[in-house]
Image (tube, rainbow, N blue to C red; front, side, top):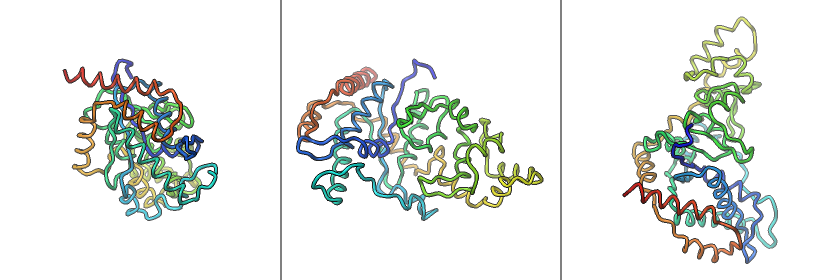
Length: 328
């Protein structure tokens, strides 16, 4: 990707928020947990410092975001334990902790509304699908698109213009890096993971098969051309005489793979025409002001304490200035 291309930073909001919420020990001046709120802003500042974006998009899960996928598989994301702090707070009950978590999320939304940032959220749509739709916008054609998330689902979106930054591993995954690490082209990653399954989403895969096995037994998956389930089954049938269990197992589990594939693929996001229009409008008409005074007031009210926010503030001002220059 050219260094001269414009760059948009696309953040998986809840993925980043929960990571900060769990591990950041920050307390307000009155002793209340604010690690999710403050930690998110600190991580955002770090990402902004490293990527120097021209625009920032924050994608949130909409209310009932998992509903469509749950209608296909009722076990989708079932069994997940509530996100909890990795430490106890004196005199705070479990209910109070949950209320505090919701407050931090809501308050974070308020902070971001005072910045030149596009926040996108659609009812009954997951942030993953929103992010996929954002990367497909004509508005960002020719831009460098940097997705920030630890979610492997986004590997399928890596291409000439789109990379995935995985903050826990501190690694940038581009198309070549995905191929090098997994032996599978990003265009075929959703299909490969449909075979393997995804424990984090409670989706069973074909028993005994991992991504390394897929890469070894289906070498054409490394090619840029999209592969289909029919391609997998045909390859299994052609190699049936080898008596390798992997081919028999995949052929016997076509229905499971088909269902998983429908749940996992993002590059054709299942969003209504109206939803796509809303995403397009939100991105193209995001607020172009930066209200530093209001943010400072909010930080004082929330007992954020002392922290150097200069990089975040400077970048927000630059984005405002760039937006104004484009309009002139």
